[in-house]
Length: 200
Image (cartoon, helix red, strand yellow):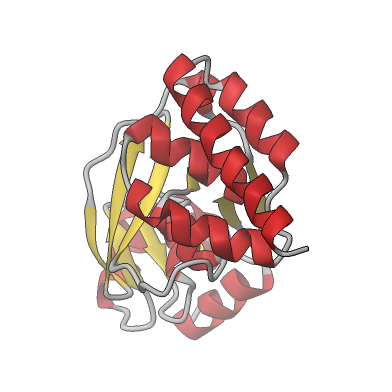
């Protein structure tokens, strides 16, 4: 089986990010042969040992397939939704699994933030990308005390586009079980309300 046929099979199965086991299943060959095939191919990229992706794959898709369960959040989510002007060079991934950072994923770094199981909520999966809702990305910013400097910009953009659900924001804050986060989110929600009044 030619590797071009393997690539076609990967694409037809929606496997733009795949493992050595996927290659074994498609080719019917042994693990050693699969590794040899991958090492000689210029048609795939290596994310880490045993995990590969096709060259034109969205880097967000690669990032959230490294560790499971996981989802993309913080500044990466703000950028994904077009709520900030910055184009970050790092993809921030929240996961219950501890994982070292990765470099060179479509020219970007992937940084992993460890979370308790209780914090794994408030995200959706679409096109094989697990992405935090705007409200959860805000809660995560307070939870990790990271990327909070963007929140005024995020708030203004999300309010203008009707992308903020105050009730959902409050719900996610309560689910964090942190009094500090709840207090900060309540203050942020007040800004949303004031912004809505100013627009009338």
